[in-house]
Image (cartoon, rainbow, N blue to C red; front, side, top):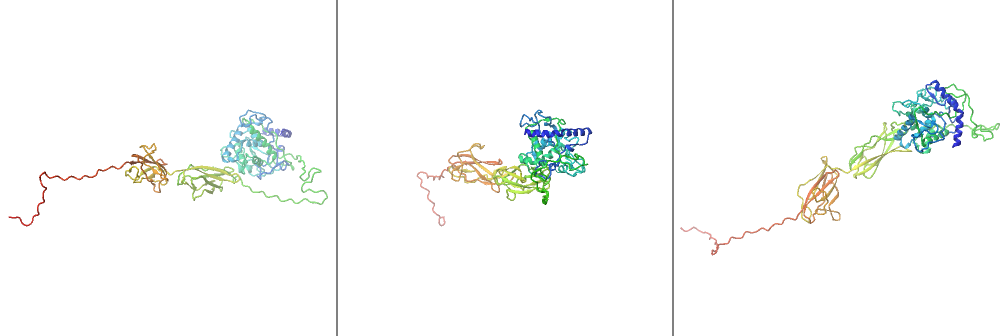
Length: 604
């Protein structure tokens, strides 16, 4: 590693004077925009330069493969591994990060963590790219709003020492209506900014020269294609999508590792601008376009595996020996590029679309419906995204139609709403899960609760006194009715308990009782439920040999209750009915004889 660093430092020394002179000249001229690594100090298309390149999943680079700074981190690293931004200055002054620039990177990390948490974007990666692309916005030369002043522009991408990218924005971002230039602290070319630009500072503009806007755009760009930046392979793909060069990847990686070990905050405008730009590509000829390089540069050393390889080497593909009559094979037509979704079409995140608490009484419909919001890679609502909603739990709750899983596509406003939920008969908790996206799906989980059916009033339906003799059963059944807001409360669970005091605070082990399935006495029943009319008829009640007045307490989940008196007493004994004695005749008097029946006419 040390040898590699020494080689890079020797390589950079040859161009330091040129770069310093260019920066000084620009500052003296008070040009309206500072051009990074222009002319001979600039770098172009790494493919044209013969530079070590790597293919990525993206057809184009965010920067148009513009030049970048190749300065490496100081050899002396922070002495507190794991620290983030509170260390004193150590090593080179250029290792610090200006305050506004550091704040923008951390804000972008927090924003992306909210909208795309599975990307796991680290702010240190943004800092590494910002260092390599613009030297942290030219050492933090930004105004109070975080906008680079003057604007930061790369060289014209006119094919003369650089990639050829004709104008795509009419000069709106780069002030060049002929060719595109990379713009701002994160060096986006206008065509990429048109798709990925952000307004992170809330000023109503998407400005590539504003570090807050540019940092968030870079963060979303790096997270595209469902990347997880905590995975090394995905992080490498993300960096290579920014600039398609393995040399670029190695440089960014070195700063990323350095910032992960710790860095320090410095005041805006006090940072040191890097001095070593990437190597420019060969110039095919003179150019009159802006930012053109010198008329000629050394050609790269021939490679043995290309036409014109080094002497004595194996001829490259398509080469022929002089006079052998052979011809070069006909080149195959290039494979057309695969069309890839634009950021506006790429699924980015899944969020709660305002779903409130999910609570319902057993057997009833939930007032709330689960709703989600899908966003694209730019953070805007995204339509036509399939979202699968699944109910998990044992309460018996289902979506309307009796389904546990349903799939709904988001509408034009990015929202998808699940069908109505209907609570099952079992009280308890369950979850509803929403899943969208392929490759690296986004998931939201909602907690929900089913409560037991409720009653706010419970009353006995009869008034007859309930009495039984010891050892007998009560002849009259006990019937009650439950209501909720004056309406019959069906399916309400009721608990019946025999108690011995008026307040019902103590269980009773004597007196009236119910019988269980085995015929044994029980004095508490918990399996009682009101019928469709809210009525409950209690099982038979029996009396033991203990006489007295007892209480039967009935309660519901909703807090309604009623207390009913039960009396056990022996029946009262009644005396036999007595007959009055006949009155005795006076002593010596014969019983009165019956008068003779008169017949005929009395004598005269």
